[in-house]
Length: 519
Image (cartoon, rainbow, N blue to C red; front, side, top):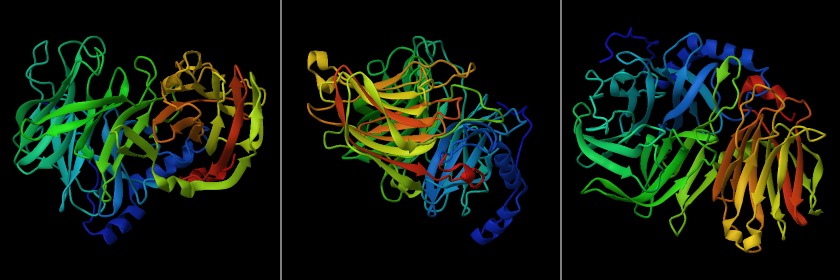
């Protein structure tokens, strides 16, 4: 299938690191990327310290891995003027500072190179991806910077097959890959028994191979009709051990966005027995801010993940951005914990601190001297008996534009463990072309008397809020006014107290955007 497509391809690069670096210095494609980034630098919504594409459209992250001391990020990439999806490629020493590399995978026998993941072996990296109108395919690379990818001659190694209305025997879609003693294993993250988004159920089909060429269908690793709701699928799967004898299946539902299962993986039956299910996006239907994941286990044993973030407006000349990279782990009770990678602290400068103070009931306090469009904020608020407390960011002087981060407490029922944290974008932008989004509201259980502790990352309209290590909420805002940079704290119902607030401006990881630091 798919052989009618005209093959596309890029340059071939040397095989030694020194020669590769020399070749990249004058590489025509990279020179074009650098020029395009310069052209786009004037866009006020280009993020300073999140990864964004060098023009064109970027969608799902793919194949996050560490190879020979470097982190590699691949992603669905539609270059400007090209109507087919490739795998873009970037590299980092620390998961914070990224550098463009040439396109990694070009469509050949498939219409597009869609989502997939990687497996790092001692002598090579294996990529598996979904080739649209074709099937799941394999490519390998072994050079220092993973520039030279070789597709398997039998691609698609797991071809698309006819299915019944129930989805039998299996649908072929987004894959991941890992190895066990008896060979390679791969998932096809998809759905069964209905229409996606309406009444189907989530299923991840499992395949095994001894040689990467011939794959046997083993049935479903998991088929869910309990934890997820009708209409959800199990796309973009990432399946890795996360500690204490448990595995995490991190995936994406086209109906309800990013989520996970945690449980025991039975290697005899090759089934995942879920003990926990959790959501990482909490907006309404098809609107979750946090989208598809790519995950890996690095050399330090950390479960690392990165996601693409939902857009709510169309940018000119580019589309898409990645979340900050996360570290995920299990608490002693096997609940999932999350935090941004530590290296982000290296971007901080111009530290400011707000003095502790009372926040009057039904009022807000605009914090003098604390403002910016690319910041990190750490704060602690004692909500007291207030029913709602929080802060506003990207706030204009008169409050015409502001994005609100708010704790909703279940104080009326005296159940603080039922509190919720939300991001409200209803007043985030005065632009007429910004799509509406309902608030992103997730569960945040606070003990009686426990303060609200937040770590807030603001990056020219991108907002990521980490509540301790228990919850992260993400959103995209598009403020129109130049003065929409302020920060305020508020309380509703009763007074609260600001215990501490520290803020830093954040440096840019992109040379062409450094002139915007501190604004």
